[in-house]
Image 1 (cartoon, rainbow, N blue to C red):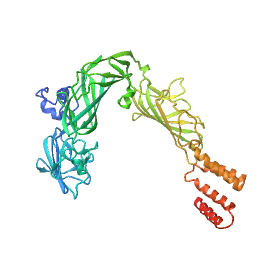
Image 2: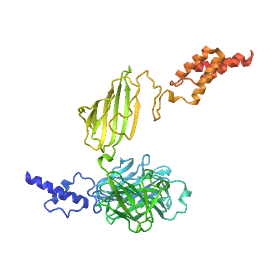
Image 3: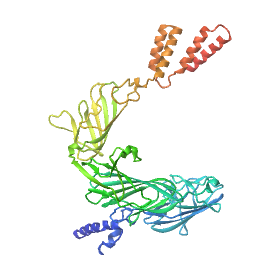
Image 4: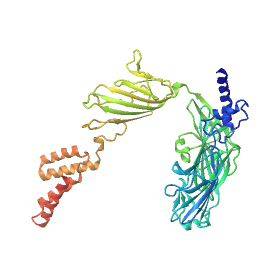
Amino acid sequence: MMHARWLLILLCLFGLPAAASNTGGDIPPALQPWQDWVLHDVQGWHCPHPPERAEPVSCQWPGVLELELDARGGRFSQRWQVYESGPVPLPGGEGLWPQQVRVDGKPVPVVPASGHPAVHLPAGTHRIEGRFQWHALPGRLPLSPAIGLLRLRIDGHEVPAYRRDANGLLWLGPTRSRAARPEADRVFLQVFRRIDDRIPVRIETRIHLRVSGQPREARLPLVLPEGFTPYRLHSSLPARLEADGQLRLQLRPGIWQITLLARSTGPVRTLALPAATAPWPQEELWSLDSGHYREAELGGGERVDPTQTELPPAWQKLPTRRMIPGKTRLELVELRRLSPEDRPDQLELRRSLWPDIHGSGWTVVDQMEGQLQRSWRLQQMPPLLLGRASANGRDRLITRLPEEPAAGIELREGKLALMAVSRIEEDTAALPANGWNTRMDRVSATLNLPPGWRLLATRGTEPVSGAWLQRWTLLDLFLVLITAVACLRLFGPAWGLVALLALGLAWHEPGAPHYAWLHLLAAAGLARVLPAGRLQWLARIWQWLALGILL
């Protein structure tokens, strides 16, 4: 048993680097037969991995999709390189399902996957072929965003310029658009970076692309500061990182965004980039997000007003510098280290309130989420009485410290998801906005009233929706007053007062009449002053119709 245990430990130690490098050269010969068993549940280890990365770049890579369509149907073919078995998307969708699909010449079933038709392929290089059948050429053909490049022929004619939106829909549109003169192949890049001053230092790179011309495959040099290695890639275009450090893209016309996350492999003091070559831009904008464990600033480079740039909105509050690759050298200057007392808690409180039906007390349910930086005991202050608390899915013991009037719970996790149930055993109209012994970044509350209750008004700095006084508008006040004055002039002061009170209390009831009162009063007034005859008869009819509508 001890021998098997040490064998498993050695296998894990040697087997995990094999998943990162995707080679078996570092595994001792005695352990190589166990490689598949150790990595049985590890997703993506068959896929290519760049050096120093633990995540695969891509487990599927599409070739050019060839489409030949006409008024009766069409056919398609595409080559896929698959590193790990899984579903591979096909062209088409609901109402335009592909038929007679073959993989490497053999028929295969088509199943839905992520909203698109797909076939399940094992690892390897495969050629997929299929057909479409319809009575008329559709206006658009759904394509998965994972399909990058395509070659389109309609009625035997090559279509060099076609329209495809961000969701992947291929517009087969008017014939005049097919004959349009294609634009020149151009790529315009904007690069924004955010330095996340943590341990290790991370850099988030956002690449904005404006692409025109023909769909094509391109390779961009991956420009990163020395000492940083990428670990995650998000792209609205088919993209992957190659082992030589280049970014491989399948471009098509449109506006696209690529997000690349990289982390440092050691201490970071200076940040510099090698000289950029086209189409990489000659300048970038860098923002610093510090304050997690220290206060720091960027030295060097030109200061930029972030609000006057195209930086992402969340970055426009951060200090920003202009970086010129090959020339600018930024320094990460530490101003001071932060102690745990300097870092405030980052918490959001969502409170639900239920008053007792007789008004003798309140039931309070608090949901708190966020990050604890300095508070490791949360207490509720009077008049709140803590009755139950669960944090991160587990019930917690409620304790009371000596000489402390409030009960609370002990916490040791930094990330918090708390649910607490409390009581207020008194009839009070003043409710605490927080009630906990720590500061909240954001507080919201929902009041659940018993049957027959109504919220008259609230006092506070934040607006409240649903209170009776807050629902009144100038138009509501004008209509109620004009209706009451009309009743006073037509039926006397007593009826005017009754109308004012009745309308004031019932105006915001669901389904309460508003303009019907004005019709009735106008008809009644005309019927009184018009002389006997046809007009007075019409006013009487109007009065009875208004009364019927009101009832």
